[in-house]
Amino acid sequence: MRQGLVRVIGGVALAALVAGTAACNSSSTSSSSSGKNCGYKIAFFGALTGSAANLGVNIEQGAELAVDQYNDKNGAGCITMAKFDSQGSPDVAPGVARQLIQDKKIIGIVGPAFSGESIAANPIFNEAGIPLITPSATNPVLATGGQAGGTPWKIFHRAVANDDAQGPAAGNYIKTVLNAQKVAVVDDQSAYGAGLADKVKSVLGSAVVTTDKVGADGKQTDFSGTVNKVTGSGATVLFYGGYYQNAGLLRKQLTAAGWKGTLVAGDGVNDPGYIKAAGAAAAQGSVLTCPCAPASKAGGTFVADYKAKWNQDAGTYSDVAYDAANMFLQGIAAGNTTTEKLNTYLGTIDYTGVANHYKFTSAGELDPSLIKVWAFKVDNGAVVPDQEAPKS
Image 1 (cartoon, helix red, strand yellow):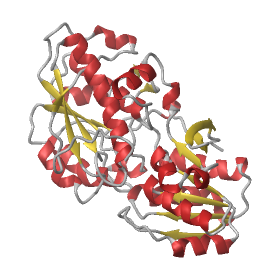
Image 2 (image 1 turned 60 degrees about the vertical axis):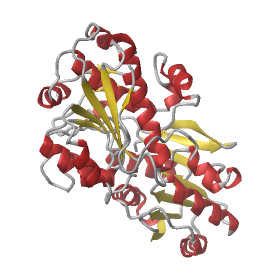
Image 3 (image 1 turned 180 degrees about the vertical axis):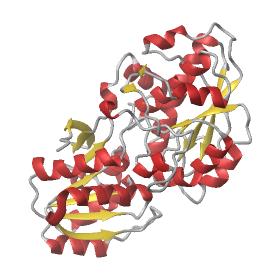
Image 4 (image 1 turned 90 degrees about the vertical axis):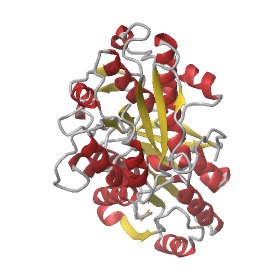
């Protein structure tokens, strides 16, 4: 891991008192006076340990910064942030979710961070009536109760585009920017990775010359079978649906086998951990999409504030998580201090944050007019913005 900031004990992190103000939003400056509407908790739910922990830590730190700033204005400890480590695992998530709902002071959740754990945990949050805003879980079925054509969870809100936008954008980048005629598609069998890969395949059609699946638990280290498929297919581009650790190891082994094509992947790989796993030379030129704008372009003082607090640059979804926490904080400041009131408030929100503007549909999706998808490139050992990804 690139951060020494994982502060968890067992599956559930100790709740920590932190601080935040809804800084960059003019409407959030109307928050309550010191001491008013205090004593409540916002929870983070996601991976703080495990093979994809970097992405979870990015999100937790963005949310924590918002709460920290809010408490600077409204009194130390006005709002507490409770941290719950799901390890990003659908198997672990339900038990952690049941622990979370026992704390009746928690009235909002930033997360879950990943799609698979969302499918496993969100029914528990829905039954308990605790509203959530995920800054990063992108599988489309999350807006329909975790299954195609299902009933939406009443507490669900997604602050980014889903894979119905990200997948086609990645596919169109491969087709129109990279001009690839032969593409390999590989996924990790997770709800996120497989779903995103399917969207890419639907765009590329007959250009997909081989497909494969790798281990679903993030622990696979030998990708020789997949390497042989890709190198033998004539593909000049590989799209990978999954998370950064496996993507990095796969890219490293492809390079060692002499494959000189371009790896393209989604937001689960958009992290410096990918470069660390692959090695800078092998990762060079990789393209990583995200249904988000670059955190380095976030508004207000967020970029400097994040760097000052955490001594590192904001990562993927740090800014979106900051906005998600501030939406909860603005609602609490306005007196929405029950889970029911806060959930109703989110359904009416019209909020300008540091990463985007936010309004939610009746199913909890980000308003379609507000969707963003960006492509990033790995260049000289760093992930840097490339361009807004083509939608068609």
